[in-house]
Length: 563
Image (cartoon, rainbow, N blue to C red; front, side, top):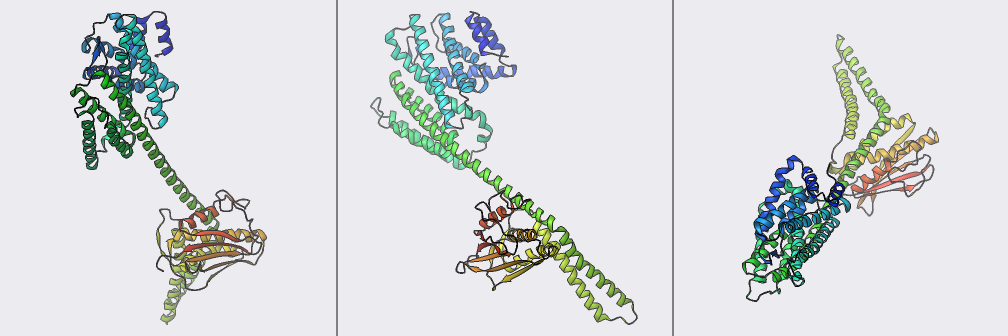
């Protein structure tokens, strides 16, 4: 397996050939075609960006090929440092037509490849760069690595060319600074674009739409106008309108985040380079424009990554909220199942009574019909009573089935009396087994409310069953639960009370908090679910009295608008 430490040892021992062989072997066979394509892309971009030179040294401050190579090293690993080494050699020979000696050419290629490979390793392995560039830190780490690599290359190449007498001290400002600026802007513009496209190409390819095409046209028009204002005048090196470039780039970054920022910066850079070349700007002016472009690039990238980071945070928050909502629904269903398990035997007895009566009525009707002088009127009366008993049993089963249903809340206009009646039909059989009486008092005909019937029945049943448990603790045979409903808050809400003569509850601030229970065997979900349901309906729930014998819970629900 490829090891940087082993390669460094081979280079230190003077075994350059073996080191290159080790590096070459580290590239897997499936990557050979990609490596060859990268060399071709690097050389083609070197040819396109080769505009100025000074004593045989390219000094155009624009190096997009390096941005591509640096991005591949970050993405694919250090083995692609060899690809950069080969690309530099090929470009020196076939694009720059250099007259430098072979040892100098090899040294230049080695310095460039080693420096940027080291910078990529530093960013990815030691500074933990996320190649997706999802956070501000990742963008800053990438730019810092590019600046460090460019600085090292500029210093080492300057020393190399001074030692070999290819350049004089006076030549350094004309060669070293453009070289440094070109490498930095190449990495800053091209590398983030490559990294984002590598991770999101399929997703981005499906986002093209007519509104997006219109935005692209507007961006091109705005950027083209800004570039014409900057370099289209007769005054050379006129930076009066250079700030116009910031507006379209920042607008795209705000609209489309990091992806839009990278594409906008690449388009702006290509347009700027094309116009500077067309108008014949020299290397010094070119460098000054590229320094401004680097500031624009940093601004665009930081705005874009902040927008993307915030959108991802908002999406994560919405997903977490959806999961929480789903968990609450599951908890509510579990609570309903828990309630039903406690009421099952009592409900079986409740259903058995009308079924037994129905069976007796049916047999009585049979016996009457078999007699010679059948009393048809009596048979009709028995059959009517039989239907009533069956309807009663069917109603209990229907209410239970609806109560256990699972699904999204169904909000509709509800009658308060019907809600309470249906809920207490399910609760009374269990209350009877505990010698507890349940009374319902509705002071007056109440207006309709708007909500989910099953959820509101669950609130009533939770409070009633809690009251049963409190009464059971006292072991009394005269248990009494009083459910009342009346208008409150000056006629704007319906207030429902559940009062019992049980053991009372502690008045704690955490009474309605999840996993908080005053029962020895409680799981602390009942009152929490009640609070969530009531709050979702725009109401409130509270403990009115915690005293032994007069415990009272209340909750209020707003009336439906217009009632």
